[in-house]
Length: 52
Length: 315
Image (cartoon, rainbow over all chains, first blue to last red; front, side):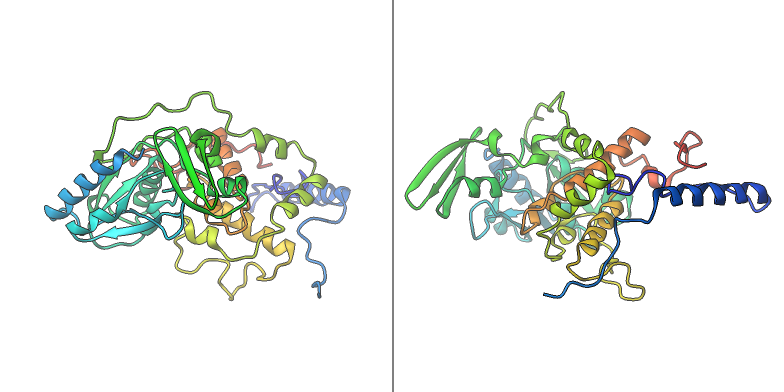
């Protein structure tokens, strides 16, 4: 995914068991913070259709 | 390589006469130079139409999918690896096939040759090392190694890996080739540079799907691009849609692509979409030491689990 131009860190993978509620909260916080820091996604965004 | 044809015809005729196979899948001369087309020889008399030269770049494994009859197939190094992939993926049985292996020294890039001349090329002939191009008012001899398809110039598996009959002595494999020089340049780009780079790369794409149709890996009954419920990818010429199509198609070839170059060869506008499949090929080798289609006995990395599989990306 980074090859095609997404910033490193915008996509993250994690393994959280249903029993690991605290880990889940931590992961969600970390991911949202990381993505907020990167700002809105610019690549792979379809803007309005271009009309000739 | 042109000297192979006599032996190819002999073997094909014998197999058809003995009734071992119902058809021999090879090439016959195309209607324009440097465009040989796939051909099923079904009777011993048909083998006279078979040809072999440096314009046999199409991957014949593409025509084996779900075949019921017994087939002899003429296979270059890359074809043979795709045949192995087909067998592993249950698209044809090994018992149905007689693989006629052809050691290959590379196929020529017709686009490059066409661009070297102003007029229309009317005839192309070749000997071991040289290509003679004739057209209206010009005739020139060029060194074959200068006009190889890029994937052939970078090829490290020229000899068939799986075969029943071998047409000629194996050729020397190319050593010390840097297959990924251009890829490393892209990897080194920043995200802001990559976006315009790929948009430019695919800017001429007309969404004809020739790359998909020529690819031996793309045998899904309904391709994701053709599905409408759900519609995975938009069908417009919007650059996001075009990029999505090419990236997704490349991902579907991960760990399966042999870099035979059929996609790029089939593309009417000459897009180098192999950049994407080669990136995945490189990753598969770096992460799993996997090269597609090298053995019938090893399962591909995407359908096996090993405790040592890299998992650094999971937090």
